[in-house]
Image 1 (cartoon, rainbow, N blue to C red):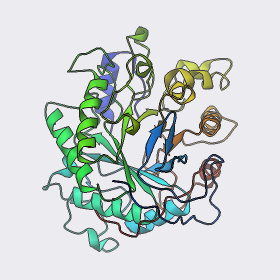
Image 2: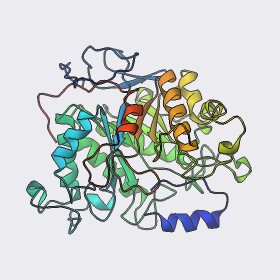
Image 3: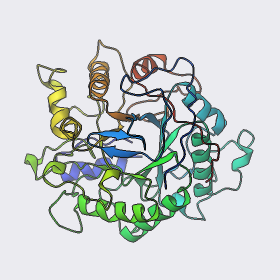
Image 4: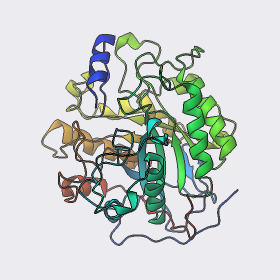
Length: 405
């Protein structure tokens, strides 16, 4: 679930507990009716992707804008994406592609990668007989290959260390930094020959005691991201390394920003990788319905928001420093008569104006803060949300002729 910025460590604890080799150019298949970013070429993409200034580009230097969606569940005790208790997983992917999403951000936990993590609930086995007896990692393989075979790029997201909730730091007393890095190297190696597995989102929403650039090995998220990122690139030099922000940079009077959304430290202390062209930053941003941040009560709202986004993460793109993916944002309302809807429209406009990539939160309807793209039946699409998102969508990736795990 999405976590608001917190002003005291006690409140943070309470809410945390409550939270549930270039690849040859391929031909492009573009779904009928799909909207396109004006900045993107209709020509074929050539993998792998890389960063160039504030843009993500393909091997030919053509800009690529990721416009995707999150499908969560693998990070939970189900060890599988949610909703397949009610629907076939391949039909779910078909509908995502039909709605024009060119990227899937797939959350997982380290626990789900253990051989013993075999689902005992959450899967209708008659609708999904090919998942019977598989463990979490094998189900991940199915979803990843299913997505990429349909022309969806995949960004893997280490969302939690285990099923019980998010962690402020990249390690816990049960999941070490070594395990975190080793699991990433395993996944990077496994998917090395699948060109559409494009990115590793290293750790979801660093917050609370997470710092940036202070040199403290126990809390400095920038340093940890460099260690993990370089290990991944050694195993798979084609992957983009996605580094989220933190909550509070240098104190900031205890106010901070959204968990994972504060990238102010990247200006003074940029992440340095063995291949800098693989670095992409990521932020998360949410609405007043998720948490009543002070900026939502500004008399100039929503006109005050672009300057705030510039300050927190947008400057990296505007200054041509590095690309940014808005890895999570969302809300139940897109009605321009209420604050949440106004905020969503303003944010899409900002992303569109600056050619910033995104993955919307979420496909799932069971996100308590935001709802989803589909309704409680896991089939009916929220037309109002999709009308907004389709105003800024990039083309699908080319379907690979060979789609190995």
